[in-house]
Amino acid sequence: MESEPNAADESGSDGVASVRRYYDALDEHDYDALEALLRPEFVQRRPDRTFENREAFVRFMAEDRPSPDTSHELESTVADGNRIAVRGRVVEGERTLFEFADFFELEGGKIRRLETYSR
Image 1: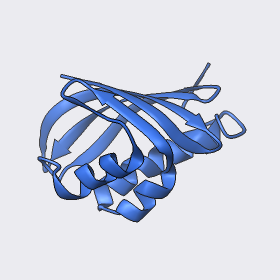
Image 2: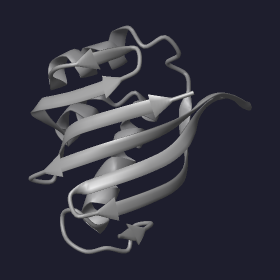
Image 3: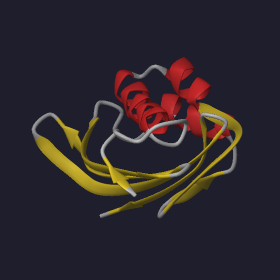
């Protein structure tokens, strides 16, 4: 298991780079880039809802996100094969809205599954 983006291949540094681009796309409201990072069968499960495909997730982020002017501050990233875990917080200005832990599964260089936990 490796902390930070020093592993090799799709699941190592490339996978971590894809996950970092995921957060950049959310923070920059770049929904085309977000869609390109996700597999069509992408699924996200989180405490308040589940998105069963890429289109539903991207549409929610573009149109219905409750706090769109936020950014993700990543505290730690761990890569193990095609699985990547990220711990961080969502901030709005100087205020932390919540902390999160995201668990990604990648396939073919794209995000296939995301489990999100927050408090």
